[in-house]
Image (cartoon, rainbow, N blue to C red; front, side):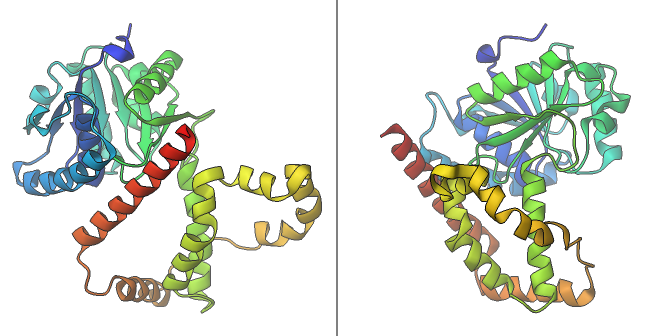
Length: 315
């Protein structure tokens, strides 16, 4: 029913924001022909800015054969955007009414053989596909930002999604240069976002209680767990840290003592005071740096990490 994932050459990317623009950049860098659908032509300058920022880092990492910005077409008509598409990456605004209306239209326009992947981070595919005439080919394909650099894409279907569409998406994303994670079930926040939310919850508690500033928290993460997680993640970091006994030693020795921090905290109330502390703290870290400069520096450093990992693992 679906095309061979390795024979897909034409992608439609929907959305003009950082995720939609980032996906378009990624697919272009992998040598695909990309049609970008923007809701309004006025979004074009911002979209192009995202694309140009991404292209520098993607060039540093290495472009696929035939990759070119000239293979991009920008349109504002949905039917035109979907013409000839072999895969659709949807990154529309995170509003259920907008996404449902969009999937209803795409369900009528696209051939049933074209899989649609949604970048949503907060909605379920069961909700999104509710009014689509062909929900069986609709999946979540949730990236991590920036999607043109970070390899992860979390894949899961909704109640009406066909299992073969989920498996097809996994194969396609892998061929397209991503690190696909096929989830076991549909859950809010997927996997990576739930882990990120746990860190975020703890950070907000510490700021609210005057225990740490945003700068303190970022220093601790960047110079502590973060570099180790790049290599081993969370589970294997604890497994290796406990020597020959591995995770068994970790849980048997430290598990009982960790019951309190596992259970004592719920989400903090986002008071005006907490909101201001977070905003002021982050503004202090940023200083007079412009957003685009900070994004460019972030991308340069991610590229350096990805290069180092590639060289280490190949060696």
